[in-house]
Image (tube, rainbow over all chains, first blue to last red; front, side):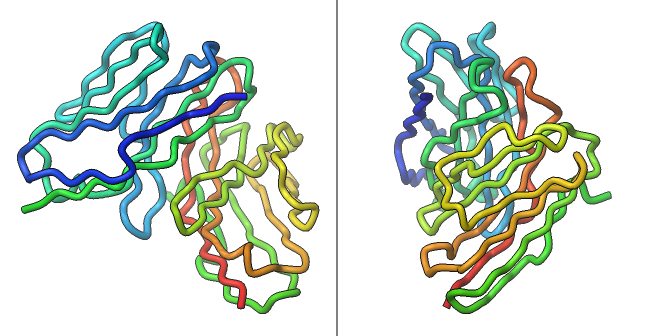
Length: 113
Length: 115
């Protein structure tokens, strides 16, 4: 079955610097890769997603890249702000897994003032 | 205008009791899910229903029984609660199963504490 590994588990960056979170997946049939942000005590919420026919996608300070050959995808946050502090989850799903999404183990991002 | 709602938000109970969590979505989605998030924040899928039919049943103890009376509701009943059941349980919904682009819309979560 699909396995998604996420690194690092914790990340601390200075406000204004960039943060990068990396994930790898095992199922070559995976074709949809969402990223979720979970603030303390809140629900996970989708922040950006990418499909397998696209290599990069940007939304303001957030970008996601996908390398299908290497089965890697990454989240990039530029000009980090205090409100970016949260736990971030990558995930992967495929046609073959029906409606199942497999989540990575999460990255706790802290922004230092 | 709540999209995915869950009740109760907090649930504190004794070991051995039976409890239920309710979930409702008003997004018109076909698919609903239950996830368990433990203290280490791992998000683990438990069940998924598509149009009232069970399509995903992960290795969850038989004490957990989901029920979907219609596609807008998915409830979770837990028998004989154990200490290890303490976690946050999230309900979620997605538009459907086709295309693999099953974006999850999460409910606010139910924090279950078993004493």
